[in-house]
Length: 301
Image (cartoon, rainbow, N blue to C red; front, side):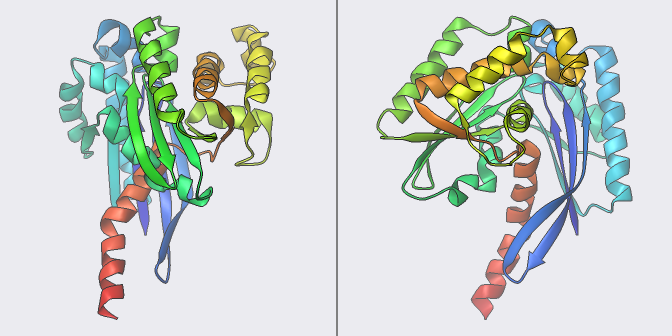
């Protein structure tokens, strides 16, 4: 059995095809295929408030290709979500209808739904009870924040602060202040708060910091990485450090967002499980289609 997740983000569009594994009452998934296309829809949406015709054509072509791939892999269930760029594009709903003609039903989700899907993988439950965590997902157009304590969700919020938005000078100082205030307000009651970071940029930073997945990154280490990366020109980050063209520029504002949140949340360290929205979508599909059946089976025993 295979499920698929499509994430239409502000920087890139992703397709994850995952193999669903059932072991008695436990359901998990293994990543089979991940395709990433750097369309940069945010460059249009945040400045012109509209997805341009060339990028709209590329998006529809990409969705058609994803539909064909899902058919070839015999995907039984899928979910397609669009986030910040499509939320702000005036022609977002028009594009949803055009994409429907490719055989893909696309949902434009708001920030709160995006946050819910992201933390649906319940990563915090595997990190320890009696602890507080600030879950941070940094995208091209927005940053989703959630506070967990004793594995329970305490508060969540979405802010229009993202890497593409910053590069395009579309971030606002008052939004930064709102985000800082929110973090301080919702973390100050805890003696210690740990960070959980998701998104393509923090995943890359984690790999640069250490080969080991889930190894925490301290504030000092992240700041050192930021200073190191900033010492190179954009061209050298691509040619010397080997970063992808569409990663070499956004990784700098991503560092700035994470460092700001770590500072104002007094985070001791940030754990990077190297997952993203597509992982949360797969888990959402499992929760919707498989867990109810398993629960019914358990009750009937």
